[in-house]
Length: 153
Image (cartoon, rainbow, N blue to C red):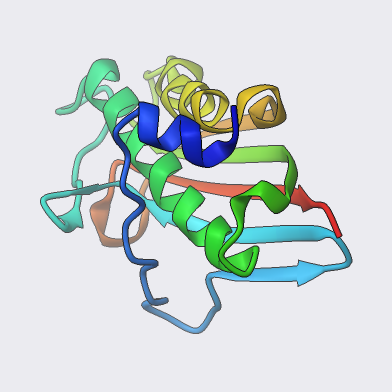
């Protein structure tokens, strides 16, 4: 199936790409590699505020990660000139998980995004990954994820 057939099957309408809120751009391309800036978790259009190990669950985090993967896909579509079929593969995902010092399930939270990318892109969505616990994320968001992808010519 094509990426767009998968999106339709998943009943996903890609959102409008967010504008940067500081001194950066949403993506940079060098050669056939695209680097997407970090996208924060949002709930009802606002930063999804919370800290794992304190007031947000792994299940909620997986939902947040899935929604970030959709937002990243929208930005990737913009980087591809509007054609996600140009994506050769998702190369790497990096996840920053706002968590207490004793929280150890960062990988489980991040699985939400990893699984969603495979649902959207199929085998091309399988990627290398890092998941880190951090003391805080901009706007108090519970989660931030960035992505690197390779494009076809």
